[in-house]
Image (cartoon, rainbow, N blue to C red; front, side, top):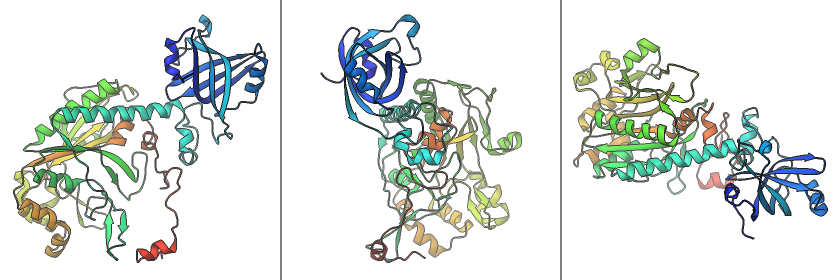
Length: 461
């Protein structure tokens, strides 16, 4: 008998079917034993009675998380026994056969419940068990659904999905790079991308005009609830556009995802806007939560924050790019580029989208004039030699005819975390890095063989 997916048994009343999955729970009530069997589609209550003495004896040994194949007849539950909390709640199976496919050790934590009360370090170590719980499975389904919707939405509007390299060059992007030593070029290093910033600009030089991808990004920075070492990004870039074009496309996409895919209400449409200066003056934050009811998780309050400072003072007192050095500057502020006393007054053509107090999208119009870009690098303290070493490829590309362009990127995991009202970004990532920086299950970073280090011409000190 072919296996029936559990959610489909609602169409199988009075039929003999076979189902397979994990034992979610077991309840013994004297002469009747109930097993809640779980697969990726749902949970089914299976009934075992003493009328089948041999089967009743077999089920007595069954424990949670064993993998079973059960055959039986689907019937309606008594009216008082129906369970509206599950998709199959009006039905149950009267078991006729049971096959133990795989036994299981006692899990280190209960699979039932939300799992929030279990230590994260334990949950990520056994993430393959944690993701068996319906709450986590539903998050992964939502994650896939949102990505699929965005792919279709942008593709239908002429955007081309293009993948960019993972092994790239170390350039200033705002955080520390993860470095990868080269075996073929001793003493030299690749960097894992903090974002595909320069590649997407090169795609615009290449005439792609409308691009998107879901790149994996890496940033070696201190961890917190909405930040992790590696994350997915939704990256969008367009040629021959200004701020209004980028904001319009993003807003339309975000509303569709929020309302049609996630099914939540957007508080205000079109999204309200305020400058960075206004946000700091009114809320003392550049990512304010503007919900009218802060306790209402079903309302999405989006806000555009614009005109960020171009430069910021770093901890060591030096000048840094508040966003990244490729961000365009308001024309009226360009003369300030050569006046060190006015650098922190320069406004960037940068915009962030905030959701319920979380920065979820950020982007800008890009500088395409090599002379202005060189002045920005000078303001950041780079010498002419350093500019050539770090950015020659981009400046040279711009010398071959570059269109005006701009774009935006979402921290996809953070956006999903905010939309699903999860307490941590790690809840929405399939295999997250722990708060202490260890990867799920594999427990990396780890020691490597001395031979591997020798091949790379490096030593661990």
